[in-house]
Length: 478
Image (cartoon, rainbow, N blue to C red; front, side, top):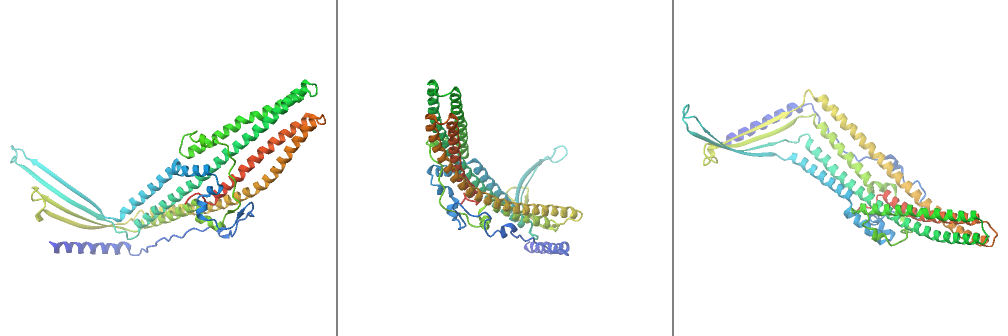
């Protein structure tokens, strides 16, 4: 029996070898090689186009510092919010689920390398008619194992696994991209909260001063030293300032609610933590931004785009493999008996071994068109990679410009606000002495409120621009 099995295996092997030579003769296997995409604009960018100002330097950025850039702002409340957002954010959990999905798909593809084995068993009974037959009960029992395996001669399975592996890595980079966006969004909303609190304090202070001016104007009117027009102008200015408070309070509420949702909590859940009025976080004296080439290593969106190119390159190889024949080995081992007791005896054993080959003949044009489809998709991914790199360079250049220029603007606003405060003091004194009309005081009050508000907004913009710069550099994941 063993000799017969050896002969069967040798015969099957010989048949497969002949079929392999027959179907693959004249076919040259062309394994598509993956080459990491390159970006000409990035290769040409030896340094940033924007002159580095405002504390930004081209020194290499420390990866550990960049991964937790919010710690450089020295605000413990912000640090706590960032850490909680990383643990509870729903978008982040969704991205993690996508990574698990990609890993499962890769695992399913890897099973294609293994043989397929199925087991079966059965029992049957039959009683014939006593009128037409013997009327006896006959029984039969079967058990068997079927196995099949497809040799991956043209790397169809291997390249499919490579594609799914690149998908896993792309999903991981997308997860890091969510982290980068999440940490930046939490910080930006936190800066908005502190900015609105500052603006509310400024408005309240100006409102108090304007109330005093209004009361003074009313008193002067009752004494015949001011006109009714002065009173109405003072009242209009006072109520206009008062009307801005609800808008600021509503904006403050929206920013606080946005932070809560980013943390995976209900709106209002962190109001008590933000109730204490604190200033906008102060930026560090020096910000290391590295070089443009560092973006390829840091930015998750660039890394994800590169992995998508790798995945599509492998899928082109899978499509090309369909032009070549596929081979399959199959075997069967079965047991048959009319009694269970004799089922597992050598006499009930039967087996078979077979080999097959399949190759497309009349569908090759369709396959070639499918290859063209995959080639076109590869070109799209390459263009997308180039676009992602250009977008990353644009993000950093814009962030560097905004970060530097806002500090210049803030300096001028600070000087203007100081002058406006002095002008208001002088105008009120001159008005009280009857040397200036009330319109001078009114203009000075409006100018001071406007400049102080702009100064508070500029302080927030500087910090927010630093946050956007860190985000553009790919900071916020480790």
